[in-house]
Length: 315
Image (tube, rainbow, N blue to C red; front, side, top):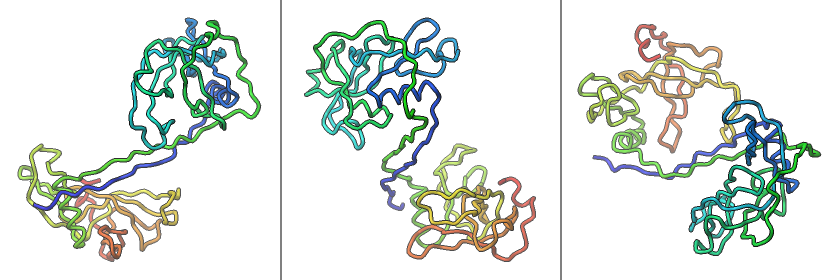
């Protein structure tokens, strides 16, 4: 049995979204050290505000200003802050109901230790020195022993100079991936420029990449079967948007390829042919990347196209 592999993986992308009038006013207000909420049909003030009433689904727009002080409603201590969290020292995650608000805002509390945090404690906003119109304009909350803010929020037009109309939220997931026995064997075979799948003992289908079990029959698979290297394009798409950090000129073709002997199509890029000449049934072969253990792309073999009936179950 081959050694089971593992490796650190990072999935990361910037998520860009536009803002409606309520969210735009809220984030622009933070930039100006102003906290806005929105009043619902039943009079509840929601902070952070939302565009639609969660009960009636009616559109909301009655903005009000609440105080920068509030009360902790619940909390959890974080002894080991991670990368890009609001504070680099241990802190408490807190839900804070700001004075004048009917709901609580999730943020962090700068406190010396968990013994200094309690439900019901009074806190206030500590503003960031540099503010851009994001939730991070609130650097954190800090303990506060002063007078409470007004319980009745003041109406606010939500109008600011140079309003924030969109945000970019980075999303990142760091984890260690362990592919398991079947896929470890598959990856090791790629080092030898071979493609190996596993056959189901019940339905006899060969799955590539192998999963360790048949998704149809639900039984374990162990019999290794070498497939390909040639295969057939079953379906494809033309990519017209260049991906960041991917040195491939657009347009290019990404396809499902059924390797000879496999009962499951895998993904691969098609090259060596104009993108507008790629077609279903095209016969292709792998082009390996020197010094790596993966196929760089697939190119036409020059064989006649495969008959549709030979791959229609894999489309």
